[in-house]
Amino acid sequence: MSATQRRSFMNQATLVPALILLVLLGWIVLSTQLSLWTDQGQPGPGFWPLVLSALGAVLAAVITVRAYAQGRRGDSSAGQNAADPDDLISVSEDDGESGVYEETGRGAWLRPLGILAGLVAFIALMPVLGFMIGLTLFLLFVCLVLIKMPLVQSLLLTAVLMAITYFTFAVFFGVPFPTGLLGV
Image (cartoon, rainbow, N blue to C red):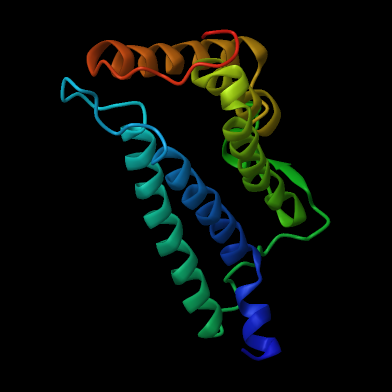
């Protein structure tokens, strides 16, 4: 691979989904260590993490390959943002009152890498905190730190998502969540 080809692969459009792909592949490996099915024939604690991480890995691989192909064709917009690289954060022009910020330039790396770091921390801390506490902290991190949502909205969204997760998987499907040292 020549230096030009390496540069076309090592841009934001290919590097971020490639890193996410690696994390998801690790999640696939970890989820196979949990039982996929219970003795009663219901999905086990490893079933949905395996399914979701496999789907995410396929999507990340497709995005990575497409971005790499655009870079090889010489599409100058692949991995580049037309905004000034020193413009780190700008308020979205169509709704400046919403408080939702659009990252541009070098700041565009912060959100995807923050999500990647949060996922790695979530996976690493799951044996200690358990799934429910770990997912709650991850969602709060995304809402408060990365998206910069107001506190009340972040708490409400996290509570709704956690309720949906709990009732869908624990109650409806009967899938036990991995517990941590606290037993939660």
